[in-house]
Image 1 (spheres, rainbow, N blue to C red):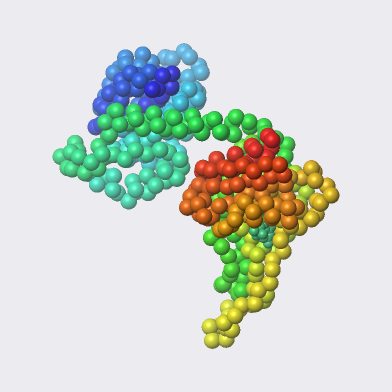
Image 2: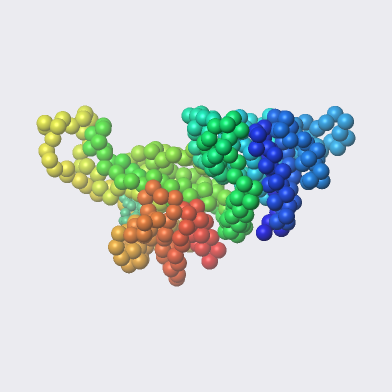
Length: 414
Ligand code: C5P
């Protein structure tokens, strides 16, 4: 049920706009409080009065208030609506509106509200003929997904033009079902969300490392591993959302574009680079070594590309500096001043090996990464870890972001 939920329906200018009337009734029957905003083009399909009468609320179209309007705070109406909404549903969403959403345009009340929103936004693209398959639309849909918008696939069938194909708005009860499940998962997420304790790490300087080092044999060849840095980015993101001042040392192959701007980003390539950066920031309050540091490197780094003909078919290796061990040794005898967290990726005897590493490297917490679990490890968005501390062992499973929050909360609350 949607009792008490605040839902904004954004209606854009497509023939399916009439179905938004049924959607509105459906949501109201489930107990939701609904407001509607329309794009100017949508008013060519359904009258403003229809939605105004059914919602018993104004139906704004433009950001600017009506000149006859005496309420001065209407200038920030899009912000108020965005704060009010538990969910925004754009149904139907035309190709034009999709493009605007993806590119952050704010030329109408709907677009500005979406831009200001922190709640989930469900976009229901509907379009005729080949518009849904057009490369530009496909690219916009992909980008919408990457930006965190929720998309509902259109249904296939008879279109207004007389053509058959994908482009029809799903039935109101189907959209309502999707809204219900998105709101449920948003609520579950909120329970574990950083907003629950945004000050947990306030005032702490946290250094996080992530991604794979590259150990070069020559200018074009290196030893590395498949780490994508996702877990380390999730740790940095979670720490920042708990109020910490975060520096992320990331492999230069890691895509950090989605991290909040408050995180200081410093790239590294080799384990030596990483070691130098860590050394100069070793006085951080907390250091989280999520980086997948290569344990070995070629003894010799050739200046020129090694020729196939002259190469020996053996590669002498030497150990890289163990940075975490160095950090553990450095603060030995002074525990309590700094929190050190290491990661251990294991394919067998996870608990035993991670326990042993925690002691040997002299760190407070070891996060054991279970590589035997399919939903865990390199390149995936989920993880399953065993957090080993001085007095406790706990499992965390879920998205890497949830795992990161769980781990930090456990370390700093317990
Ligand atoms: O010994 P192992 O490589 O399994 O230890 C993993 C932990 O140690 C990780 O936290 C990793 O970032 C860190 N490490 C390091 N320097 C190395 C190898 C690993 O700091 N040369």
